[in-house]
Amino acid sequence: QVHLVDSGGGLVQAGGSLRLSCAASGGTFSSAAMAWFRQAPGKEREFVAGIRWSARRTYYADSVKGRFTISGDRTKNTVNLQMNSLKPEDTAVYYCATTDVVGGDPSNSLEYNYWGQGTQVTVSS
Image (cartoon, rainbow, N blue to C red):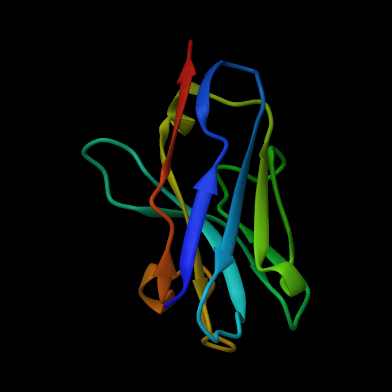
């Protein structure tokens, strides 16, 4: 069974930065992509950023483009999310996810097999 552990959340003032990390372990699993999603209170879970290993491509939600950067190491099954210029509307629980589906839509949460437990990010104004 694959186990994801995400970490790095916290409280930061608007304009500040945080770096989230996620590591996958366990099982025999070949990750095709990893991503970050977030869910704010009363809202649906939404895509934030993703990385597809074979294509070496990254993907971002419009709301975070230019502020967030996703990176990772396929050999270590790790992914990071550098978040700069944070805004109060970025406040949410952030989840990392991974999938063995090749060629899918990286922004579709239904395509991800495994999820982290979530880490809280709170941005104060």
